[in-house]
Image 1 (cartoon, helix red, strand yellow):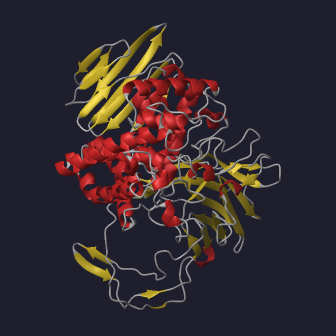
Image 2 (tube, one colour):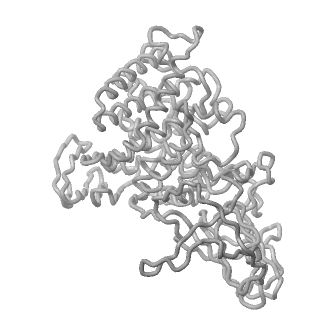
Image 3 (cartoon, helix red, strand yellow):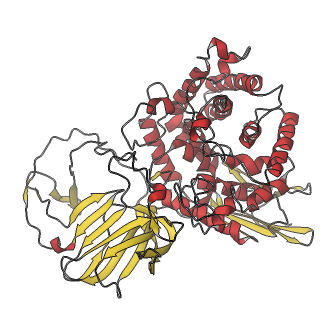
Length: 634
């Protein structure tokens, strides 16, 4: 992400053995020869590829190899393959600035395949980007940080030097984030074919949602596409500027991600990267695997609450969805070390920061990213005092999950210790950040987090939800939450009697809102609420899955599907604003369906329970039923 190279060493090596019917017929040894004269002249996973088709066929420049004793630990990847997936034909257009641009109609991560006829030595260059600018011209500037990047930015370049006649080319080891490609060439493109291939790890789509609002349906599709664009071997934040495995992003999206696609193997593999890059003192690397050389601020930011807590949140979500305790066993030490570090931050509280009897459970020290990407809050403001409630909130919330994890693993003593810490952290939170249970803040996130993390009593939570509802209404039914609390916003409102407000937020189509980007023609979820402003100016990443976490509420709130291991509950929250809604989830225990439809004021529910399961169903009219396998109309 900084343009650093050779993060994992400078030596290129190959080790292989080819077997036929169990017999080795070709092995890598000192009889091998190599050449640097092949057609791939330059190749980088992110920057792109330069390919000279004239060098195909009989190669020259062969020479011997040097051999080294194999001293490296060889470990299988234990993950699913990365594949070419959907394909999109490019449409040529001419921009107001006179550029020739291909539009593939979908923002994605992948590459372009070319078929064209040319003379030997003619060149064609494709520069790939996510958007056209406010003037309708091609741009890459929304995802560039040219001052920071040691190579001046992310090129996303494909260059083909043609051979005589027909040329058929696609790159070998690069992907890029794009919908558009600017074409630079003097080749006649009349008969040329350009096809964009989406490339991501093999993950079947497992969740589908549809309703009476076309924009909401598009939002769900955009969320699926942002997941596809960012799950190439590891979950990344964006496929353009950084392409980094941020812990915070995964922590807020995991519940939704597991519903939309079968991403368990990708996430499980990534957790191994997290374990490998954890600091000895328990801090969690914010990005795993590393994508740049650590700077001065890196170790300090690796203590960030919410981000580091992904070490607990993500394995816990995988376990709850599948009942598989192995993911807990594999990651338990990592979880414990992180939680001990977070608790240690609290216990280093200075005398000036003391807040009473539970001061040593109040996280006031250290550096946090905070809520992140809140409307009206700069990144520096998010990390500055007095916005310090995040660490203590996660000390309580993650501790509660960790206690449950310890209990599931048969570690009763650990579980009791974590429950004790949680109890004290909740009291510390109340003492430091509330007035006897009453929150005073102009930011919605403070209310959302306190309610969602069970940091208040039930009456206090209701009062906080009342205030939150009023704040949303006074804000014109716009949110002002960021990464950490947005996934819980609608859920919290609906739970405490404000489903109408939750739906108004969902259907809001002016910024900041989920549907603003849909109205702007987005085909993926954006990093910020105004990735393309009202003047058509693009900024930041336009393919970021984090805010797609709202889809979790569409499945779990609107249609009410909740699966936790062996337990299936369905508690839909219908609303006339959508007219009808239906969610289908191909879960680890089989296909679950939940839908509802209005006819006047009457609501009809249709629920499908998979084989060998029962579902505990709660309806808004007060009915509670236990449904057997099969399809039921209520």
